[in-house]
Image (cartoon, rainbow, N blue to C red; front, top):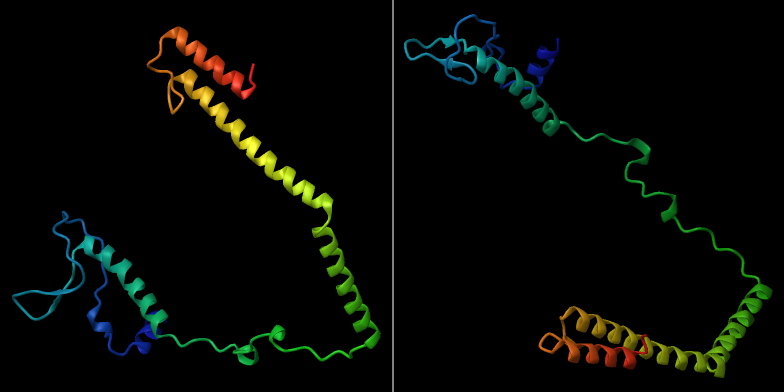
Length: 181
């Protein structure tokens, strides 16, 4: 039933072109895919056993691909093309003068608080202290890496060409400058 339904949907495919594959005890020969005509006569010849496996795998795949490509899209009915409830604007709510005035007063009050805080001496002091700490921390990190580079003999602070005594003095001077013991 399935093959007759398939063939009725695809009239250009004739059922006479397909040959059923049978198991054979003959030794395997060359791979031949599909049905072929023999040069001696114009009749169809049965393919060899290995090509039957390929044929059995390729025909259902081809039919599935053809079915997918030729099928018409499904209609979703009422919901088809409907963009959704969120695209519809809600009703206009009544405006209450008391709430509008309260909202405006709160907005003004918050803006004043923000201005007062931004111009406060405490915030200015904290921002200045933050800038100083940032520079101090940057210098501490730079000194730490310079000391490490001198000890390992790499980087800008390398003590590679120095004598052992000069190297010790140089590293001690870097540690003293950085405040490291």
